[in-house]
Length: 248
Ligand code: PGA
Image (cartoon, rainbow, N blue to C red):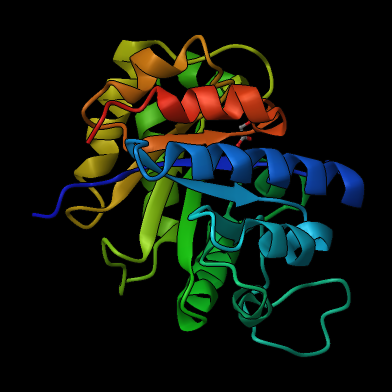
């Protein structure tokens, strides 16, 4: 089986005007060019849709991949305010984050909706980063594995392959809170997820990953990278997380 190259993905969420996005992209490109392919991971940034074109242009030639934060299931149509996966691909995206807890909670996205979006992403040739994770109440009730398993079963189309699917395990209570799951809980959940997805598919951890905790988390054999929110808005912090990936 091919080695799973670690993936460090920055989810900028709804942050950044054009100038901020351009500055961050330039700072990351500079670091990528200086590293010259010596990093032990692949790097991805997912800026707000308004910045994709500009950030994509700046990052061209840097080796840093571009991704969207969400998409509609359909390629086009009467869906005011939405963006189709083909539109993301047209802007140079190779990935799209789907089913993030902020979409599941804030926009009522169900597993069935997310599943449709994942299928749409694949139709457009994008790799889907499918987010799953339990709430604090569910973890305290001992339901974490059950909840995540059911999200996986409901959100992944039957045609999933290791090349087109990345799963991001993001405990909802760890997102943006400064709390992270314990190393033992992360290892246990990732092993559980691994048994339910195509062999060789990557599993990222997300939820308050920062330069201090990245090494321990990324050192776990079943953790194939990180989905980074807050810390991805700072080029030095994000790069330091990427540098925490064990070499090749
Ligand atoms: P955080 O966000 O790193 O700010 O916790 C992670 C995410 O929501 O993807």
